[in-house]
Image (cartoon, rainbow, N blue to C red; front, side, top):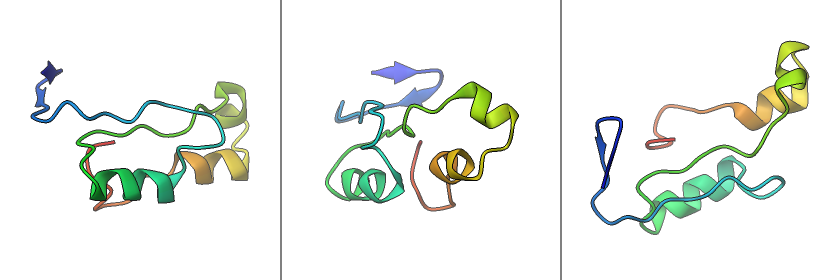
Length: 67
């Protein structure tokens, strides 16, 4: 499967789920075979107002894998 130039070999992709797909969960999923993960569903309004909790949820660090 190919999505925007990213070739996904094993077809394991983590879906976005509010309150569930935080950074720790994404790390575990990458470790056990997910090639691509996504952040939690977050509010665009909270991003506009720079809500600290929302910014923390959306943070992607180097080494997190394709996210």
